[in-house]
Image (cartoon, rainbow, N blue to C red; front, side):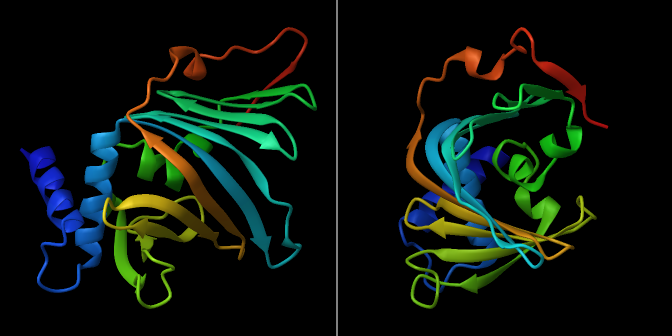
Length: 215
């Protein structure tokens, strides 16, 4: 019943059925309805780190694969190749250029983007939302929704989502931590409902790599 209500809320929001501007809760319901209907997703992503200490780092880019619930693969293609995988109770980071395979990393798997995109807990139960920009005022054609963790979350101060109407799909995110570091993500060429090879989420360490375990 809850999934039906969320889907209905998202359809109404996308159809512009609200007589007044949507609330932050309306926008999250629309985003969750879009994610629930997508189930699988493939897109290009761009990522950069902006730090108070080192300034802006080089932009990274690659392909994101998502199979809900619980499976996510970030495949970085430039400037260096690497894979960050979370599937069920397994989390892996593979760095082919240094020959390192890092197994474990439960903290990475439980990070904010995994919870938002691959998790099955309603976003509003994890974060307190507020609208900080609209399509007409500073939102670049979308809504910016700031999410503050309701419980401490790995030193995360907040997450800001860029949600684009009418589908209420996610076009970007910014994650701010307590050290003043901000990671910015942009999602491009989004395709939903795609067929994904199960092998994407079942990788094993190649021969000769250094296998490490995260604490």
